[in-house]
Length: 79
Image 1 (tube, rainbow, N blue to C red):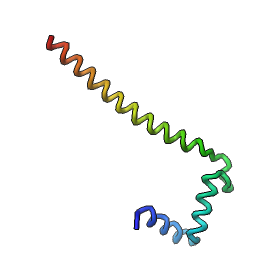
Image 2 (cartoon, helix red, strand yellow):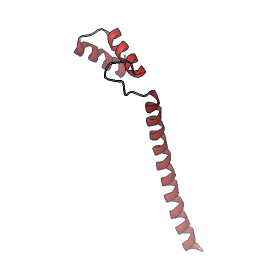
Image 3 (tube, rainbow, N blue to C red):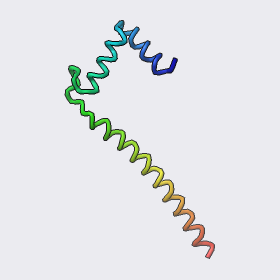
């Protein structure tokens, strides 16, 4: 049993609901059809994921830039 399944089972038990009910709520929330989730935008989740990916890429690029700056300074001293 995966951790996710354990978490789902624990949630179902804690809320004293059926697994199908939780699944229905989840699906409706993802579609923006669950009461209280009218502001849900499926594109928002994609944008959030893209931002996370771009931040990771930026971090890698900044690390590479720092390495290149240090290498440039090192080789400038050598000549």
